[in-house]
Image (tube, rainbow, N blue to C red; front, side, top):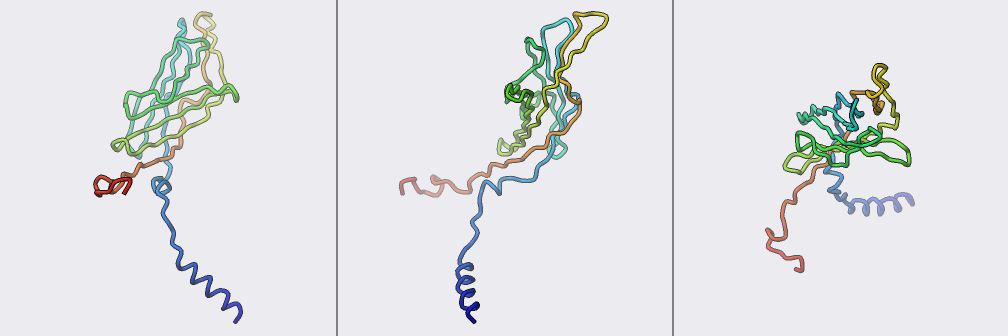
Length: 176
């Protein structure tokens, strides 16, 4: 009987509590994947120019883009600030060097649905820089980032939910 006297008030109090939804959590959905193919980041023989180049697709949204960036730099590995725009302007990427690790971070994003949905993902590419030595022409040697030409980048999707009413539409003011 004493246990019943203790539990009943607790259950009564618990029934008064209700869960409050958290908007930022409801705006997220399950992760998808970008498929990257033909990836390369290397110098060019007989040139001080270097290029990062790849194709990206996402079967869930139907996006397909060609992305590239060129730099005239030494050493011949390209970095690109995020956001660097691809040929489909809704797709952006970045390839940034981190000297503390050292290595390269690859970041990719897709903004769509009137800029209300964004898919973004990143991947550590490491720092394995190798040199291609042209045995017939020493001027044809170049450095490259040793990473597979095809890979997947998991992403998170964020949907910016529009408010159902605004203070102006509701006829209220912020000070009211």
